[in-house]
Image (tube, rainbow, N blue to C red; front, top):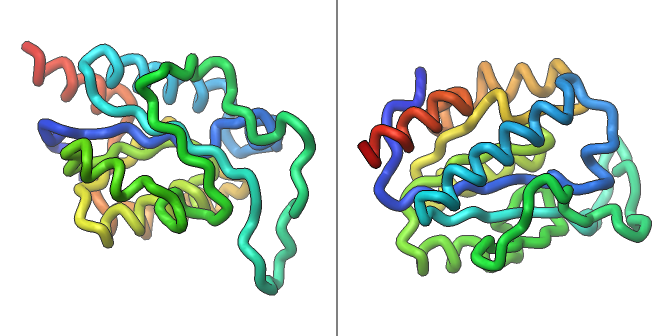
Length: 187
């Protein structure tokens, strides 16, 4: 199903577009993902809509069958990519879990801003993006996912999220679909 509408107060959430992560190998060109996320951020900012920039600076404790890539991050690893052109009005969330809502102020901040819908983009599709989308839906937000503004390190994981998970969590579309809906609101 394609994205059908954007609520009056919709926020953009950009997941983990940071120096350490964008340097990892991904199944889609990372430059394209960053560029599309930046285009959306500019469009949201230009309409006075909230932009949330999320980075990850740790991993939760606990055993897993697949060990995390790292527990300690080198200097600069969690720095947001400069292409995002962080603005003073952007809300910054630093997480230490897959999703952006766990142990952060994101839910309270969004609700304080009157946000009822979130558009989610970033890396990785099957972890940070999916975990954030699941939590957003569980918290009562309408969820939209810009499929061409995200990627993963695994094609199978990326495809599973897009084909099987995301249609159950919200609406999906492209960056262009979302830009067109934003433009129609101001027409």
